[in-house]
Image (tube, rainbow, N blue to C red; front, side):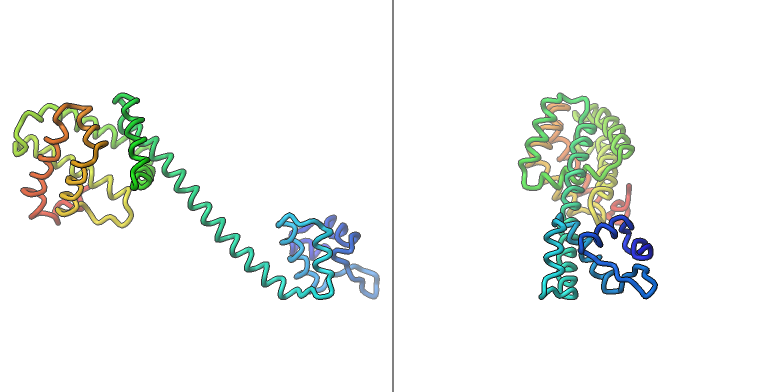
Length: 257
């Protein structure tokens, strides 16, 4: 009995209880010592599984002592059931992990935009959630650690202050384009951290991102909240950077982080 207890991780007291209830009867050798067969061990595993399914001892007894009870068949069925449960559990864990990532993403979004009117920030988050790609946005932000998001916040705030000082200049101005290079590197670095298998913001990617940004009400409103006219100037300046700097120098830029 002690050996079965160790092998099955079931207490001796429980085995005695099962014996008393005629659920799993111990056999006795010629010297009167209790022992269990290999079949008993397999049967105990079946009992354990049924107990984990919250079945009563009475129901378990009725099942395993039925005339047509087939242990091998029962074990196969339970194996299939447990595999399905494991798959369902794994899927639930994945959904929970995504929810955790999204909640973390919302927190990081708040960090990035800290300093702007909270009412506006809450409105932007609400609009993002209603977008068909909103979950992807917050999930991406959620991949950034606390250190990464605060470092990005510091760099972004410094960049924004510098950029607001040059929005009166033509987008081709060297000061403006120097800041576009900085913005490109920050964006490229963040995308490497938040997009799986990202290969760098090449010319086509940047042009597409700019085009999408111009049409995104939230993105435009964020820039406009910092400074009136900033959104158009930024996208025009970044398009200029894409056409005149990145287009013919992709290999030198896509790995900059």
